[in-house]
Amino acid sequence: MPIPIKDVQGKVAFITGGSSGIGLGIARALSDAGMKIVISYRTREHLSEAMKYLENARERVHAVELDVTNRDGIQAAAAEAIKVFGKIHVLVNNAGVYALGPFSEATRKDWDWMMNVNVGGVFNCLEVFLPHLRAHGEGSQIVTTASAWGLFAVENAAIYCASKAAVIMMMEVLRGELLPLNIGVSVYCPGAVFSRGWNSQRNRPTELGGLSHSTDTSKLAEHEASGRKLRDTGALMDPFEAGRIVLEGIRNNYLYILSHPEYEGAIRDRSEAVLASIPAHVQVPEARLAIAQPTLSNPSYTLERDRRRCLGRERSPTSKIVR
Image 1 (cartoon, one colour):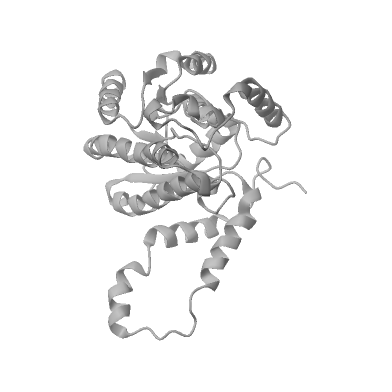
Image 2 (image 1 turned 45 degrees about the horizontal axis):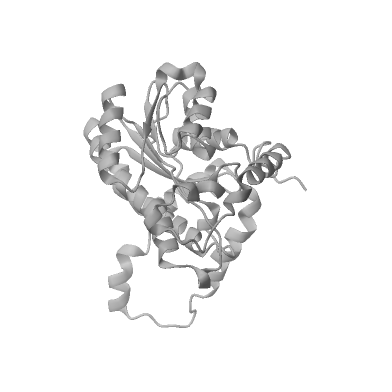
């Protein structure tokens, strides 16, 4: 399996949504490994907090204000990042939004908001950055933050689950396309990590207001305190730990970067339900089989499966399930 970026020292990463939560955890891990970092932000307060964590590497950190639904803004941010650091080697599509609520009560505005950011934002960044990654030819890695909730259904999270499932599929397809170009593609599917995702509606456009999927904004401080307590007790993963796991994925060009083994059962149940639904006694005509043949085996899946089997699935002490 080609590994485009084994040595990250001195390489440059552009991280959307890098001023808090998982994005900041990734920024810290990559910075500690000697990388130059460009982080995008929406909230200046979060940026101020982030820079405290990145103080020791301030000369290797540059921040840009960015809304990933704004294609012109992404073009400008990419140009600025390249002007500051010369090249981009790692693109981390991390910016995302989150809200819960019954799907039967969701509105078109709820759908447009989450899809525009979680799916459209990823596409927008790929459209802008891919030509640059191809052009410099030094080896690159694309990492997109999806969610374990994109791998199986979760009640009251239909739009969020759908958006994350969409980007997982995007990365799976892109993986095969870019492998010959020495550009790796990974998708990070975390479980519960301490972040401010529950407060992402602070940046919801006014034209997409009228929330049906919402967080009670009068209780933001309470949510923050509760989240910190859950992180401190181990119920929520610390973002820096998540960032180190992503760094390992970059260094090994993993297709899937998973950090929460507690979801193994849910992932298996869904996969087995799909496999069990394949009709066993249907006779497939030769003509139909011939048409389907090009899609019947995907090297991205088989290579990753076989490599992981060779490496073994022993869990590290930091990620094992404690019974």
